Length: 316
Length: 280
Image (cartoon, rainbow over all chains, first blue to last red; front, side, top):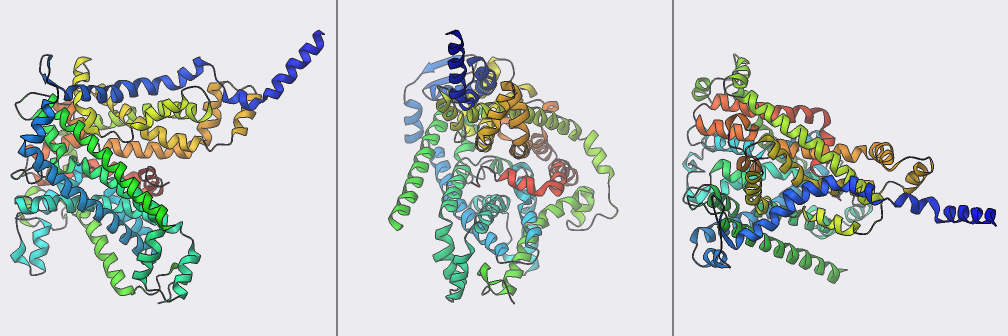
């Protein structure tokens, strides 16, 4: 009796199997593994998010002065804040153009290397270098490049005989945003290039070979064969670029500080200024901007992924 | 020219391609080389001829930048903050990723969801509140506070990459380890960590570069000059010595050199690390 009990217990344990056993862990073990990450993350990421949402509905002055104001931060910024709308317009321009340049430019660079440009493996490494540089480094370098007197941009223009076009690139409201955008693309194109290159090498070579046999020109091949096959990568990079550009701060801060005349003010630089530079001494209002902008970004990501995915379904 | 057929680009004319490739290489590499030459020249020499070669090369400028212009302090601050933050985020990120990938328990998906929401949270959404929180707990304007913030804001990406990799390790290995009597922690340390080493290397590279270059959190959370990290120090120096371009260029090189040196030896790892979140 007792032996069969022992036997059945042994059998049951074996039947339950080591598989389930290895996938199980006591609460203590789980806590040891998860608690450090969860505690730090909860305290310094999740709680700040909650607190920002709370801030957005309050006026937060120094020395712990907190006053509930309902939606008035939001109504004020939507209805009576021209700087906010200027920042939104700039950020929108920057985001749309830079996202398109990122994806199109990255794809073209990747195709150059994919088409067996000489020294392609080396160039791949060289072209990626700016991605590793900080925005501060990139920003300072480009401030020098745009320098009116001794900068590279004007020097090159003079050298090729276009001296008439030389100007103070960052000093003029009509060129400042686009000049920053060029610097931004200089830093990021290599990133998109690498991602596209990886995707290109994963394409089935038979399809490209078949197109070759059908006398398909390279442009037709790009538009009708390669681009559709890269759809997932393109969508991913569009979303990724979009998020990055909507948050653009560092490069603008280093190169222009939002000037001249608000011409490069973006939502992020405006948040920073309202919080730490303007003597309004209120963290509630900039928090409201951050919250509103976050919701807008999420909405756009949802729309983008849905639109691009739906077309997928229609086509195939 | 006979480009291999399966590449499908035989019809691209070679000459424009080669010209474009050369042009783009000059555009990417040129500015960096320009800064490198300027870092070895005095400001007077630079203003006389901005594009001259560094002859004689003023190597002593690096010593001056290090001691007189405070770049030594900035460099060590950056090193301390980045090394500690990367070690911490890797350790606790790997533990959490291992736990999520290996154990089935109630709340697994909730914990995973909570951590991965961190991937879409913009820094602007947390930065103002972090400023308040660090003030509350007396960690504002301290390197320790900045390290905590760096760890917290980079857990999401670390767990995302590591969990994806750990989950692909065959369960049989863990069953075998359990049969051999390994404890839970031994399984983590002696099975997951060695096998997951490539993924860990990837996250270490990614976090190292991103944190070495980080600016927004640092500029909000640090104020003292002797606590500044390199990006802040560079920004401060060029702001307050606008005309001393030569010394600023030396500072830029001090900030870039560690990255470039590592890149020269581990370019593939770094490329893989930087794009790990985008390449699926």
